[in-house]
Image (cartoon, rainbow, N blue to C red; front, side):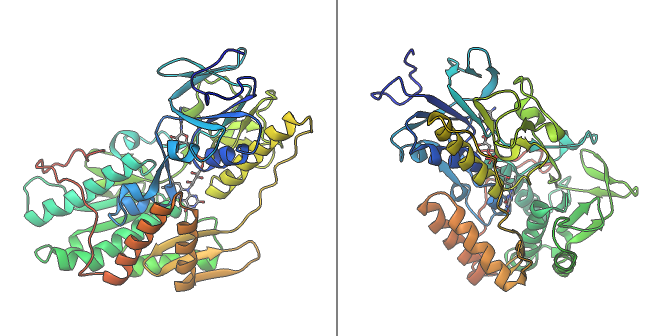
Length: 434
Ligand SMILES: Cc1cc2nc3c(=O)[nH]c(=O)nc-3n(C[C@H](O)[C@H](O)[C@H](O)COP(=O)(O)OP(=O)(O)OC[C@H]3O[C@@H](n4cnc5c(N)ncnc54)[C@H](O)[C@@H]3O)c2cc1C
């Protein structure tokens, strides 16, 4: 076997090579599991950091610093003797010669491959949605959304001619849309009257558009109703049972004909794996996801696993959430261990640990598989605790805890919203992406 400079050096080059594509929840979990396997592990990601997506809405609403929710993949891999990281954007696979093709540099050899490249926003072909709306999928996206929203508030307070009204339209009433809407409404209600006494705070509107009749569809009806009531009380304008027909440059056209002018439209509805693995030569199914068997191996490819959001398990599509990704990554790592030991692979059984969503400060809902349901303050405490524990890295845990505590105890006067630069251009066509 030829040596490959991408793998850890100074160790046996005859060890099997496991390549993990994507350093998200699933990828990190796979690398961690593989750390006790006698193999060389190479993690590839187009970004040099892991992103904790569940808290990106906090970055987008100025509650957390971008650095609080990311963790460098080199530091992560350096914890394990057999793991290393290479920054690479994967463009395809050469299945015959067992190589991963990358945008820049040499292809990467593998004996076993774990694909955990996640998903991206699905615009469902709605005209103008991809061009004119923003997402909070990455750190850069979240910073751009934050800067756009806060800039529009600044411009409104200054009375800049030609500036759009500080209206934020959020499309999609799932957890991301609800969390974003709740956090923005609180920012508007609590912080703005103090920070912007010259601005009539009713001008800052938060409009949440959801196609079905409820927000947070997968939750029990009682919890959904509670979330809707809490959002309305915070002044979020709910447009339930309403579709988006078009996202124009300066307004969103709704299915009932209403035109909502906006400073920012945040697209938080639906995901697809299509653009992520397009052209990789893998079997794909619903949502563009890679079809895998019961053991999470890609149909017809014995040495390739797909896990996390990107995978579509045979007869049992798993929810596209953090826990299935974490458990799936661990499972794939363990199956590589079994194969190397000559043992048969095992079926992946997802253990549902429950779901939660936060509505705002001191307010959340939690639903456990046992049927236990929590709402309000106890649910929020559970939400905070789980997110702090799941974050990668102690520094991130501490800084997130400190920032959330400031928001909790110091609102409204001590509220120090994380801001970026405000462009001079009142049309605010772009947010700065660091
Ligand atoms: C805003 C938001 C909020 C969320 N909130 C919650 C929540 O509260 N609770 C919950 O359980 N889930 C939540 N989710 C879903 C959860 O984040 C995902 O289910 C989870 O991240 C999936 O993990 P993954 O490892 O499959 O993919 P990801 O975490 O998306 O990781 C994929 C990785 O692959 C890399 N990658 C992609 N393409 C390439 C390529 N071509 N080359 C190289 N690298 C590539 C990406 O850079 C990324 O690092 C949220 C998602 C979002 C977007």
